[in-house]
Amino acid sequence: MLEMRSIIKIRYFYFVKPFLLLGILFTFLNCKSDVNKKEVKLPTIEEPIQFDLSDIKKAGVLRAITTYSPTGYFLYRGETMGFEYEMLERLATYIDVDLEIVIARNVDSVIPMLNRGDGDIIALGFTITNDRKGIVSFTNPYLITHQSLVQKKPANWRKMTLDNIKKQLATDVVDILGDTVSVRKESSYYSNLVGLSEELGDTIYINILSGELTDEETIKMVAEGKIKYTVADNNIANVYTSSYPDIDVSTPLSLSQRLAWAVRKSSPDLLDTINTALGTIKKKSDYNIIYKKYFENRRQFKKRVTSEYFTSSSGKISKYDDMVKKYSETLGWDWVLVKSLIYQESMFEHDNKSWAGAKGLMQLMPATAKELGVTDVHDPDQNIRAGTKYLKRMYGYWDNIPDSIQRIKFAMASYNCGYGHVRDAQRLAKKFNKDSLIWDNGVDVFVLNLSKSEYYNDEVVEYGYARGSEPYNYIIEIFNRYVNYKDFVKE
Image (cartoon, rainbow, N blue to C red; front, side, top):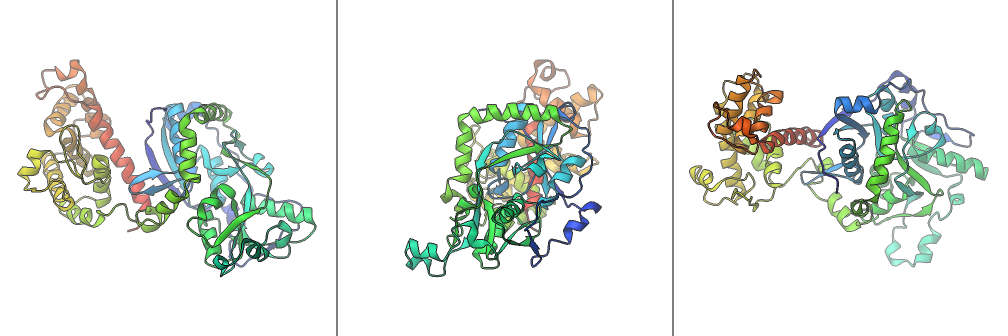
C-alpha cells in the first residue's frame, strides 16, 4: 500500500459569481421545465487560470473540490472517510504533496470553482458528458455505472407479490413520459432526461432542484413522499436502499456511464499524472477493498448513516462530547480542538494502551495519572478531567509565548514528548537564529532534529535524544483534523 502523507485541510465555498445569478432563478422546487428541447447549455464559464502540476508541486498542496456525501467524503466517529477521500489520499501521496479538501456547498458551482482556481481537481464522481468536456478535461474513468430512476414503492409493498409491486411502478422510461422528475439543473441527470425526451418524441417535465441538494437528500425526499421521482447513479442509489427500504431503484434510465475526476483544460501535465496515478492505484488490492466498503457493504453503510456519530447529520463526534466540553472550559480551549487531540491519542477508545504504557482516552502515563488523582485510568470522565488538567499545566509553562495559537502548540508538543524536549528544541532554535517563540517553521524544526546526533548532542541540549517526528506530526495532524471537525460540527 502507498505510504500516506497527506494532510487534510477543509475550506467551504458558496458560489456567488454574477454569471450564475440566472441559474439561481431556476432553483425553486416547484419550477417545471419542458425538456423537449435539443440542447442543454451550461452557464458561461470564466477562462481557466494557468496553474498546472509544477505549480501544485511548488505549493506542496493538491486542492480537491468535492461535496459532503455518505459515500464520497464524510466524518464518522471522528474519522474522515469516503471513497473519493481515500482515492484522493492515494493520489496526493503519488504526487508527493499534501491534500486540501475544498468543500462546494452547491454542486452546480464546481466547474466555475475549478476554472477560477479555488481548487485543482473536481473529485465527486462526475459523469463524463460532451457538454462538460467542452469546458474541463476529464481523467480516465475510475467507475462505470448507469442512472437509475428513484421512486417509492406502494404503501403496502411488503404484503404484495413482486409482480404486483412492479405493476404499480415505472419500469420503463416510457412510463414517465408526461410525468415530472425532480433533479438538479446542472446535473448529468438533467441532460440525460433531455436526451430521452427528445429521443422518444414526448415530454418529460423536470422539477428543478437546488444545486445545494445532495443525491442523499433528493433520495430521501422520494422516500418521504415529497417528490415522486428523482434520478441517481446506480452505485449510489443501491446503497441507499438499505437506509430507505421503501424506495425502488431498479429501473435504468441510461446506458453505462463513466465517472471521472476533472481538471482545468490549462492543466495538461496534472491530467497526465492523475491518469498514471489512477492506473497504479487501481492495480492495488486495496482499491477493490475501499470500493466494496463504500458501495457494496450495505450493512455498514446503514450503520454509518443512521449512527448518531455520523457527524455531517448529527453534529456529534463521539459519545464523549459533553465530557470534553465540560473540561475544556476549565482549560480555556475550544472543545473541538481538544477532541481532535483525544482522537490523535486514542481514536476515542477508552481502554487504549500504548507501547509505552500510556492508557485511556488521553493516554496518561501511570505516574501522571496517579499524581492527578486518577483511580481508574480507563474511566472516561476521570481520564479526560486529568488529561485536560495536565494540558493546562503544560499551557502554563509557556506563558512567555505571545501568540495564543503558538502557545497551544507548545503545550501540545510538551504533552506529547515532554516539556524538557520542547525546551531543548527552543534553545536550539535560539542558537541557530530561528524564532524561539514560534512553533511553526521555528521550534518545530528543531524538535524534528532531536533525533539526529549532531543536534541531541549539542551543548545546549539537556534531555538528549527524542523521536522528534512524533511531536512534529502530532501538532500538524491535530490542527488539520480540528479544521475538519469544525466544518462538520454543528454548534
